[in-house]
Length: 273
Length: 167
Image 1: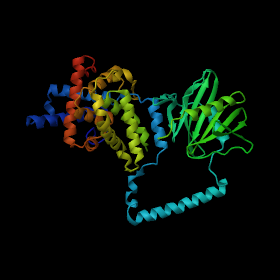
Image 2: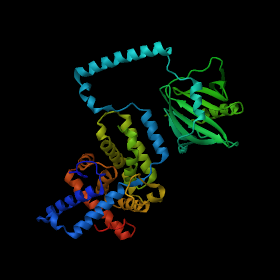
Image 3: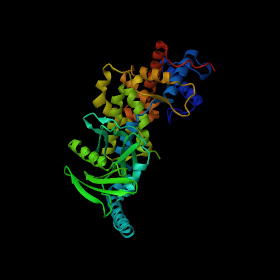
Image 4: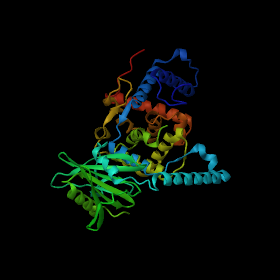
């Protein structure tokens, strides 16, 4: 039987009508212990069936829209977690099959790593200049609410690294976010802007980034950074909780501002639990 | 193949119907995904949604159910944006959706959970029975009463769906 009882209940109106009617008739039979034929349907029962169908149809037609910030948070959670394993692999997870599968996986991993070492010079870390290209891309979400527990931070965080909720007299403020995959690494960027000036605060999860050999290295307020110019932009790089932070803005005027943002963010970040 | 995050819209709608508060609904959905993703398990792709609903319901019972009984300072229908899905029944209106969600909030919990599982999340009766820990027959009778109750409340309030035209 097509309809709600044995499959997805988002069927056509006609299917739902018939299915609902059958169930109502069955309920009526059970309740009144009487023989009710589908040929002599009770008008009240039909009206009830139509009302029931209408409620179901409306609920299947829409509802509350998921807020963008919740979408972003769930994507971040999903990207940052190990994937659930498929149930169809269940038998392999038991007994000797588990050891055979683990051995095969180890051999495959060694082969893949060896190939990567040969073909990529031993590193899959992205270049900071490549990460900095995110600065030119549009934000995909405008959800940048402050963290209620620490207003100096945004509610957005990525693999333990938080983003500063930075506002200043020049009008700089957070305006949007964007998620990317760069050289196989997940990255989340928060954009800051004032007028038509723009900066990107990108966090690359769980890896360092390669920095040009002529980058200047310096320390401000205990935060060790590297900076270099890449075409029309300044790039500042520093590590945070096992991740890499890459800050990018237009050269030359925003360089000092980027340093200020980096230091301010570090100074106001909440101590991890 | 759908990824787990692809189910977030249905879960958020389910959470709104259960919690009656936008903030609680957002927190509930986020907490549900956190719980599911924190402990990787064997999942059947076709059973993801039912499993997510089960976790959402358990989280709601443990943490949010008591809160949802309190009077809301801002009604859910004012706090969230309601949308009509692409390809939906063209005579459905946002006002009608809002009225039905408001009526859902007045239903007894058992009936609310059932209509959420079947009509909002889209589970089959069998899946809903498994997710809610009851028999299929119970799902059918609760769903019947829940839809009837919603239709009556809408009719009483005068903001319900238009009466379906005679065939």
